[in-house]
Amino acid sequence: MELKEVILKIVASPELHAKWLNSLSMMENVGARKISASEHDHLVDEIVLKHAAEEARHAYYLKSQIKKTGFEGCKTYLMDELLAPVQSQQYLHALDTSISRYLKKNLNFSGNDLRYAAYLLVTYAIEVRADELYPVYEEVLRSIESKISVRMIVVEEQGHLEEMIQQMDDFFGNWEAHGDFALSIEKKLFEKWMTAVATSIQNQSLVV
Ligand SMILES: [Fe+2]
Ligand SMILES: [Fe+2]
Image 1 (cartoon, rainbow, N blue to C red):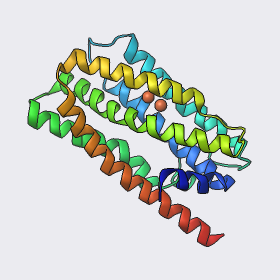
Image 2 (cartoon, helix red, strand yellow):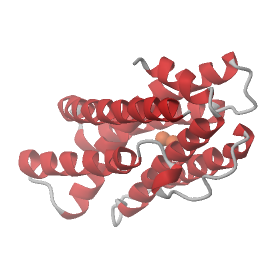
Image 3 (cartoon, protein in one colour):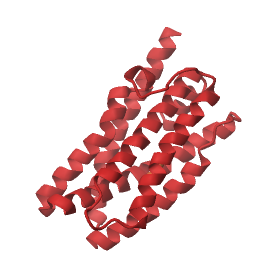
């Protein structure tokens, strides 16, 4: 199923829509925590702090929109309150693990450099994805005249991608090959996540 088709099915059900918002919130929160955890001992500038703060705010904002779906619940990130809980939880961790392994093996990075370089590549790949996913979600929300909007997130994620590119320029110089590797790993993980989300929607429809 295409991304838009999946999202259209999700927003048609208050429960699925609540779980979708909750899953995105959980992933934003994991992202915020990873950014903070990967901070270099010294190379912490305004961009890194802004980025961690904005991802945490996205997690909070998405959570705060759940009540507008009309579904009561999704107060926490427990498994039964998420869509494709296992894949949603694994997505970022698996991306981080693969990219860290690549950096160790190919660039011999360790310690601070490894943490910071992994932050750059993982976040770059996520921002490219966010720039595809959130605009489609926003388009669907507007098409059904939903009270929910993620326009603010769309704008901030675009800013993040530009900042990641600037940070990668500063750190790696030539980062294109590393960036392409990160995108190829992310694509596989995202497809796995989408398949799991689509399956959980179908299962839900069967129950209803
Ligand atoms: Fe975000
Ligand atoms: Fe972001």
